[in-house]
Image (cartoon, rainbow, N blue to C red; front, side, top):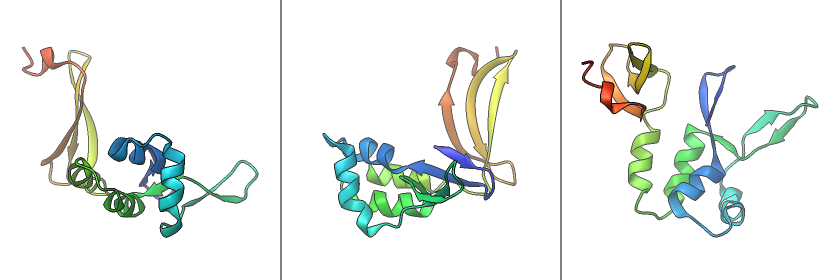
Length: 125
C-alpha cells in the first residue's frame, strides 16, 4: 500500500491483493485475466507521462476482491472499507515504545486496530 499525497486516497497493489486472497501459482497471470474488466489506474511516471499501473484505489480493489472467490474475501472487504478520509491512523506508544496502531474517526472513536508491536506494553504497566 502507499498513500497518494495529491488526492489523499489510499492506493493498493492489485497483485498483493490477488496473492492474499487467492494464492495463485502465478499471480501476474491471475491478475491479467481479471484486469480486463477493471480499469487500471494511470499514475505519472518519471518521464512525466501517465502510465497504467497495477495500483488501484479503494473502489478498484473492492471490485477486484469481489471477483475473487476466497474464504478471506468477506473479511478483506470489511477491512478495506475502513480506509477513507474520516479515518486517522495513530501509533500508540508507552515510554517511547511502539505498542499498537489504531484508526480513529473524526469523533475519536476507534474504527480499527492495526499492527501490534509490543503486547507487553498494552496495559501501560
